[in-house]
Length: 277
Image (cartoon, rainbow, N blue to C red; front, side, top):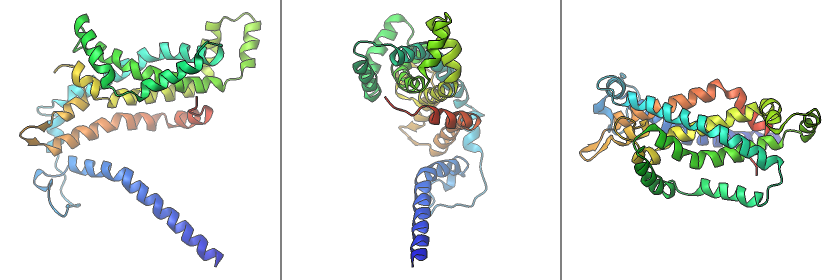
């Protein structure tokens, strides 16, 4: 009886896992199929699962006329630029908040957390006015700068949890030998938290890559990112689902490749320092 109950429990567990897998993976598979489905089968009911793939939607998005191809490059420029600008500020800040007794540190960390919870539009309007006044609206720089309002607080929270895991005794020994704070940070702490730094950079890149609110206002036709190009397929004359699916699938590929290429750092990073305050 106990064995039978155990088998039923195992079967229920696997059934629950398959259901969750279907909920999370199902929409992605559906979009991939939609990107290669012939146009006359977009709205076939019941959906046709076996068909001859058509590359018309992908060719239109990235070949001829290929409007999404430069937007793909723009997304990479903005996301990579946001990460490169993010780390030089967030790493020293996270180290200071981890190691030094800063008055109001707890309130400062909560303020950073509040920034992450704020809707992007709360930053968008003031920054759009400032970017126009500075003459950089429509440039990559304007989008990279405004992304820092969210990526830096996130990176500080994450990096601080990794730095907290580094034994202070190592730094004290180096300080006795005459090492400065900058030397300790760059030559001792940084190598020890390298998996955490890579994980932080990956999440900051993905967040910047997927963000559509900021480029929607701050980009122009030449600097528009891929999420903006995808949104433009929602036209007044109708929704072109095939082109949307092709652009969306292409947008998913770079973050997936990054996580697959650096998966060992993700595992090491997430076990090295948990996401905690």
